[in-house]
Image (cartoon, rainbow, N blue to C red; front, side, top):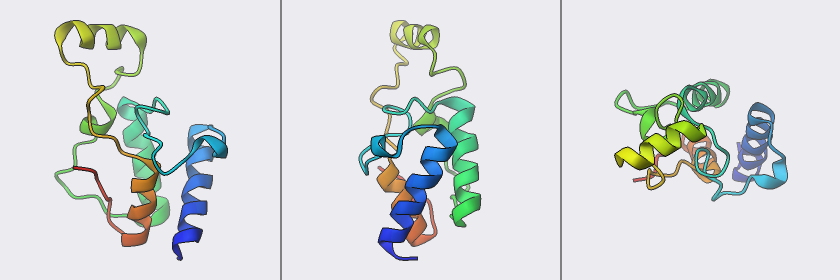
Length: 112
């Protein structure tokens, strides 16, 4: 699959799965920070993504690092995280560009 083809396919898949317009999906678009994909929804999306595109994830990958705990996308959880100092706004960003790169390499490309 060429880079252009993989980009188009990842954009199409992400748009369809997350119900967001393709025009909102840029390489720098963060799944959690920009699209609000959090908790189990993030894990489920990533599982479907890896299955569709035959992408391998390392065994030590922790989705909560990139998607937060379940419920972290709602306003009450955000207020709690802010008050307790566990606010994840500075969490690493897993982006559409990372997904595209992962398809090209066959392995989840995660930001450091």
